[in-house]
Image (cartoon, rainbow, N blue to C red; front, side, top):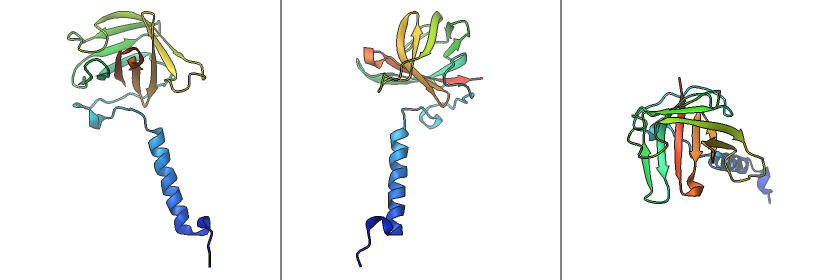
Length: 157
């Protein structure tokens, strides 16, 4: 007897497993986890559309000239975003990657939907616009399209 493919129960299970696996890998992003960091950093819950509060720089990547990844999870480099549009950076005295200590003007806004393939937000720091997004309380500032760095910050208490 010739049974159609989808009428066989084991084929349904295989298809369900295949679909679940495909969904898992297609939704995976370049997210930092505590397993990939030297020191654990506890994230504070917050909005993905609002940067107001304190953030800790945990990782930075240089992807073009002399590619390198820096783990900052054990260092005290902080980015404080105020509701008035002021960013204050402290603890980055060595400045291997990222912005130097100081105070900057910033703006965080959603970009139009037609920017397919790009991050959904732009952060402007002192007038320079950089693609960014917040996922699972991790801020990615991705300046790699201009031969810049990728910074990962965790929202903290």
